[in-house]
Length: 189
Ligand code: AMP
Image (cartoon, rainbow, N blue to C red):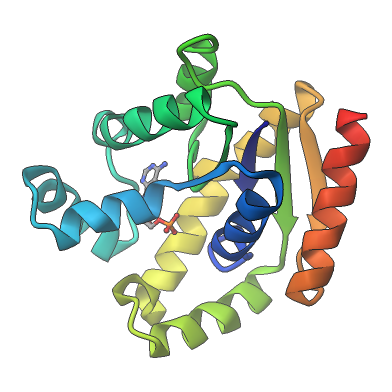
């Protein structure tokens, strides 16, 4: 199974990605986690991407593909993947789609975690208290703006492909998980 999670920062992609990966026995591939790992390890790539992440800007496509491609290749050879944070722009989605199976990045369903900016803001400020540097107030605003400008157009892209499953992400975590699983299983049946 190959899934994509979409939604504003703070909509629960990371949390649901973990839970769904365990449920379906697939890999949770978070582009943000992969990039943060490079930064923490002080690799040349990490040095290159750090300022983009700290400022809430998108990391250039070439750098993103270079970290994501290997992880997806591995996951595709196993049971599949749930993508969190990738693709994030129409260009990334088109490029991912153009490099479809057997070696490429296929998508069976796209789960859209629908949440207002207002609720997202309050969740993200909570997370800032836990120490994530790009969850400070001004960076949160930038990340929300970048989401609406660059990532939101993906909803129409995947809707047109009949892959989009919209989920109300306001509910408590276990309820959101159950709704997602019901939607995915219904479309796979
Ligand atoms: P996330 O953990 O998904 O919120 O991502 C954290 C940061 O990593 C983002 O604000 C971007 O700077 C960068 N990032 C993650 N995924 C991508 C992507 N697919 N394209 C560009 N930048 C990304």
